[in-house]
Every structure is written in structure tokens, then in C-alpha cells.
Length: 309
Ligand code: ASP
Image 1 (tube, rainbow, N blue to C red):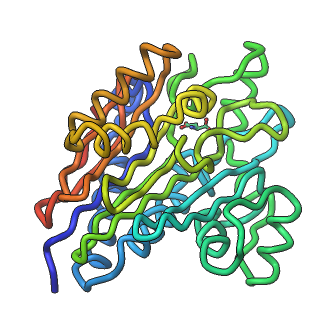
Image 2 (image 1 turned 30 degrees about the vertical axis):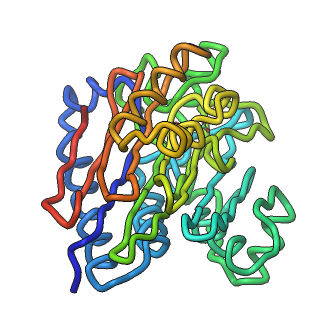
Image 3 (image 1 turned 45 degrees about the vertical axis):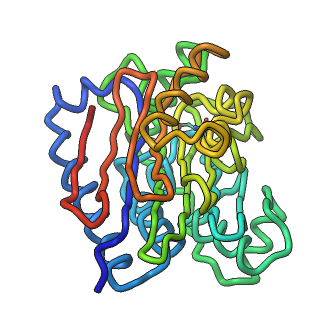
């Protein structure tokens, strides 16, 4: 058994006051703790960082509290289209899927792309065909299209716009995109991000989550990062790579790099969102320009700490 590892997960960022008002804070805390402890088990048994982030991302995707997998938000036609990516900091191997439907665990499919294809990203129908080759689990539409998401989508349609999952006017339907980052006992880093995207998004829209460097990044020499927020702003600033570059070129630690990254996001594009970061020494950090963020962490084998900040 080892305790020389770190793990972080997030469940999105945004205005979270409603969660406390409704008393659903306890549900989030229970879910974050349970998933972190499951991830701890993987890492304590000398599991790889890649296995730990996949394990946590799948557990988050299976929980309808979050905007990924089961609880994904709906696009302009009231359908679920999901994006996900996973990255191995050892060799910068990455796998991503975008615009996929009906796949129970998009991150599992992204891991297959990483391990079993010569490509980094597969989209739409081609990704679905690839999923069939590997017997990836598929669910019917009713598994994904849950009542809360239909209400949230109707509100967005009425208002005539898109919105971040946590941002809507109607408080009870704000849940979040998910991500996980880890450093295993061998010092390897990995990152994963998975999402249903932005409520009422245009059909075919792809956000930052499956884009290496924008919504996900891992490099053993710097850090592992997963982002949440307005994907277009993270794409334009290539924010996760930017955070890694702050460490690579400026020698920052995880906390400094997360802060510098969010400052850059705000300064350049008035960006809205947040990040979780673990650096190569296992230091954990978050940063967000939204009023809140849902996350949990285990730093260097310590206690699990969960926050709706
Ligand atoms: N970043 C995601 C996207 O733009 C949304 C989110 O993080 O809630 O697709």
C-alpha cells in the first residue's frame, strides 16, 4: 500500500448558492467523498494515475448530479451530445471523443481511443462505430434525458440563449461538468474531463473538454489539469496548456500556476470557469473566476477534503 499520491476531482464551477438553499449540498459532499475514497483505493494499491482518473470520471459520469454521462445537459434539439478526453502525462498519450450520443461512459470510450487507436480524437458516427468494435456500453435516450435537464433546457430555450450548467436563472437545475487529475506513487500524472457541454448549445458544437491543452492536459514534467467553464474561452486561451507552461517556463507551483491561469483567462477573454491542478510534486490547487466551484482533493495521501466554494 502506498500513500505517496494525490488526487483531485471537480463537479463544475458556477453560482452555487442554490445548492445550499435547497439542501443538496449534502448530496454533492457525499458523492465527492465517496468517489475520492474510491480513487484513493486505486492509487493506494499502486494503481496508475490514468486508472485513477478514469475510475473517478466514470463514477462522476454515473451520478446524475453532474453534467456528464447520465446527467448531461441538452443541446438545441433537446438531445444529449457528450465530449470527453483523457491524457497520460508519462508520454502525452491522449484519447478524446466529441459529439457522441448514448455512450454510458464517454471517458471509457476516450480511454479506448488512447489505448486502441492510432488517433487522438474520434467524433460523432465514427466514434460510435469505434465504440461498437470494443463493446462499449450504450444506453437508450431515456437514461440520459432526465426531468431536471428537460426543465433547464426549456428555460434556456425560452430565454433564447446558451448557458453554463450552473448559471441558469432557475436555481434547482445547476449541476456540473466533471474532471479528475492524479499523481500516482510512481510520480506519473494523468487528467480526464467529461461533459454534456453547455445547455441549449448548437447541434455539433464541441467545447473545450475533449481538446488537449484547452480543457485537459497532463505532462509528468509539469502538472495535470482539468477545466470547467465556457468552453469557447478555454479553447481560445488554450488554458490547461497555459497553466502547464507557467510551471514549465516560470517554475511556478500548482497554486501559483492555477492563479496565473485564471488571471490570464479573465484578462484575455473575460473568461468564466475553473480548474483543478496537481503538479509533479503532488501539490493540489484550484482556481476559478466563477463565484463557486465543486471539488474534492486528497493531497499526498492525506484526508479527503471536499468543498463547494
Ligand atoms: N466546459 C464545458 C463546455 O464548454 C462546460 C462546463 O464546464 O460546464 O462544454
